[in-house]
Image (cartoon, rainbow, N blue to C red; front, side, top):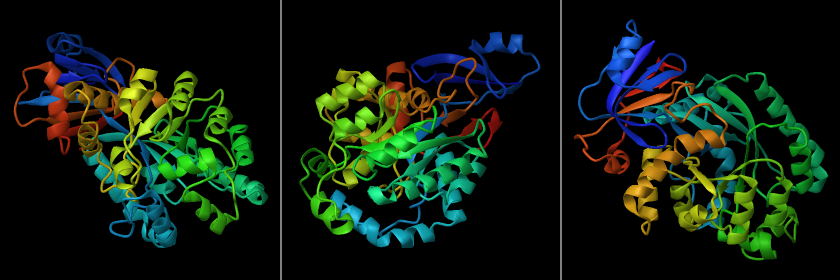
Length: 404
């Protein structure tokens, strides 16, 4: 048993003053420090000095590790220019990301306080590294392919990867499913996959760019020559509304959704889906700004992801939150900071069905301790100051075991 105390705790929902947490593999109790010491007299005490804050470990809901070798290889500023550069350099980048490349990305996330992440895997090359990661990993085996003649082969390949990942299922490695997007996966393949995956976590890219919107809604825009030239396809296989209908009865993480209109957002809210917001990726690929104010108005839950190094410069959620504060310039600053912390902790855990993301009895003891430059007197100001000043964490626990 350990007891850790701090002047401030953000428990995944709100800020609490002068509390302590008793934990083993899971959190046993949260309360007054002296009361917990009396209740558990033999516990190891962790009593950091100074301006420290205890939080649940951060959860990065969407990351692609397989493109982790990218630095200056790809084009930014426009989604189609980026996509063309990915197609041109894909084999080179995937081949360049070996075991150490995956381990480096995992270590960097750990140093920034990420205790769980959703790894979207197109090829399965990153599975060994994800299985060995100290963090909790939801491993999204991704399906992609829109050629009708190849559906059976694509399905067989997908199921082989999914079944391989299931051999290693545990509390810290959760096999899951990703549908790449409405424009890149044939509806027949989607139906076959959704009919055989049970209640596994589900993710999909959805309505990311203006090019995707023009293609899926009208069969127009820069995606048209792309599909005609590469796949001899002259019309979209699936309209956005039809794609959401395919997900009926399931709750999914829909990544980006920058170009989703109010009607789609209403459908997403009613279905209980969650949108993963990747602000730096959206900016670099010219996708636009996700209207968080509209999501909040419609009652759509949203969480945070960094996407991969193919469309970002780091996998750091603190940097992602700082970017979000600037991107959503019209939103109230302190209130938005609190929402961002919730999106990276409690809401992310809910979206991926993880018993973590909150400092409460029964949750896994996935905890981080952060030190601010100076003490903060006002609890309402604390989330913003955390986001502005945190670069690395001082201590980190996963299932009660210290890693930093």
